[in-house]
Length: 107
Image (tube, rainbow, N blue to C red):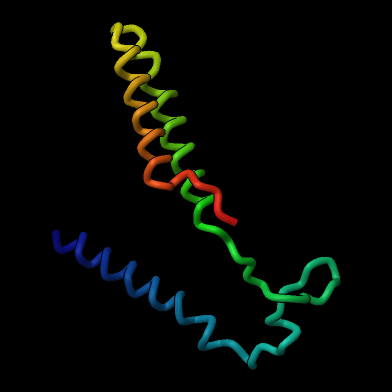
């Protein structure tokens, strides 16, 4: 038990040392050209953050959720004979999401 504690302590100290080592041995400050983004020789123009509608992210999450649900559960449900209730639960879930406004496209 003591060996494990010393091993964990040694790795923690090594991690801390390696984390702060670049800051200790760096020579100078970053210049503007070094700190800016470089893409094929062009200077960056405009804002780097593009506005993103969260609705697209929610639609993607709902799609992945239902896609995985169908992928993993459909073969087992079709084998057991409970296919109709399974499909009804999927349809009810989709209708509820639409009813709550989660599937509305807002730009």
